[in-house]
Amino acid sequence: MNHTLLISAIFASVGLAACDRPTVVNVPTPVPVTVPGPAGPAGATGATGATGSQGGQGVTGWQGEAGSTGEPGKTGATGATGTTGKTGEGGTVIVLPPAPAPTN
Image 1 (cartoon, rainbow, N blue to C red):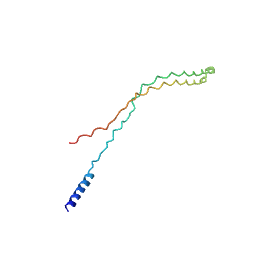
Image 2: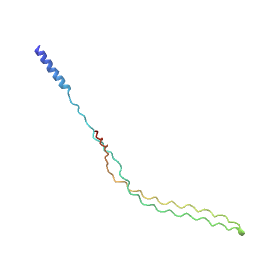
Image 3: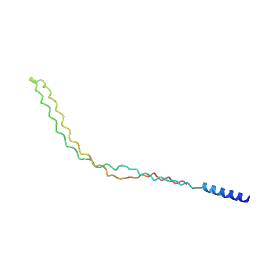
């Protein structure tokens, strides 16, 4: 009987020791967040458009009557579009969450 008690105590201690394994927790690394940089300077101003044609002169009325109105002038040409500004300088900005406030 002594042997049976001794063998069962060994099996119990080995069985309990095998169950007591610490759990390993892998903490993920923070992922960097990229934020675009500031806008570059504005491009050059476009050229001014051509001036529109002037309206025709009105006809003078006969013996003091009112003359007819002249035709309106045409619209001037649109000016050239300015060049596109430079893009902002590239960079990586890492934003981390704020640290929790300490509790008293």
